[in-house]
Image 1 (cartoon, one colour):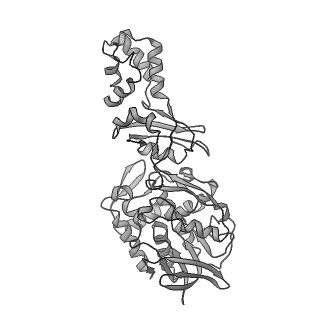
Image 2 (cartoon, rainbow, N blue to C red):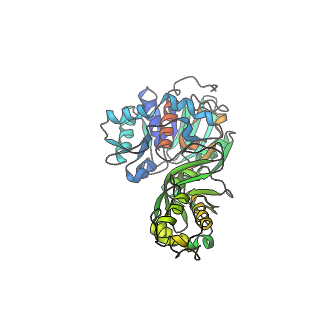
Image 3 (cartoon, rainbow, N blue to C red):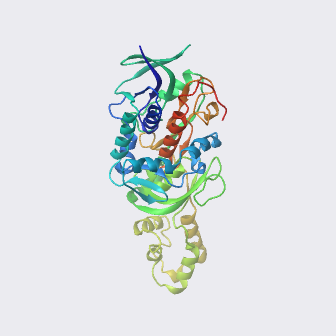
Length: 414
């Protein structure tokens, strides 16, 4: 039987980073993953360029049943810290939008960097290698694997969530947590396209591929792209029509807040007084309403929208009634619709919910129930917005955990 200081299960973003830091601190680390290739989520992120962090990361961009939990780790390992790591490895990057940082070349640069960091820490990697069981004994843990049984003082679970099964996502981490008595906050697909009843959506199927900026909200109070309390949010981002519903950054963002049966409210003409504009056009323009509306919406959308208003679509502006213009403007500024569901884990970028963080130390990510057992990254109930925030949580939670692996096992407050 082999003996190591720590076994880390899962060679994704969090697992690789944690293993590298712990190994470089002098610990004997074994990193195990069931997949043939490491870090598939990094590989496909950002269209292959990996949106590896966000300069503007704060706890406000994260959802959890225990919102304060992420504060400690995020404060102790910041985007600046990870940027410094990239700079040491001479990886070029750029800011694309709203603090989102991407590799100039390829996400493979991030993976190669993390593997070099693991090599610098003499981390042993077993892959592809399945873990069959984890048992706690008097002197630590025994982990049964395809390559035999290994004994470790610490076990770190970094197996991710349920998102994108085709690249290896499983519920292993949640099952292991339950085995040791941990509660699981109900999981659901997040950062995921939303779908609608096929019959109700039929008029919009022809708009598939059309994109425009919109404000999307659901539940809660407040706005301006900020969290709207525990149950709702509001985002101003691009909206994309699909054959089955809506996608694009605006919808991916709001999907994390959305709950079945809850309506969305969309403003398709944000930052513009459409009612006032149409009222003014009535006095100055002799064009048809459809042509006037196409000044403020993509033509395809304007024409589709007016199919539900056939009695006014072809009227010249001077013949329009004020109340009809007001009603039309309201329908576009406050379009309310109820999704029937989501595209599921197969298209979700992350998994919301997970291991209840009230049973973990926010300082070390160690279990309060089982000393020496840690959970990091997406497997826990911390979910970030779209835009690099979830990777920053992976780096931060990994660093917080790695810094504690050489300490005596304990259940710390935090």
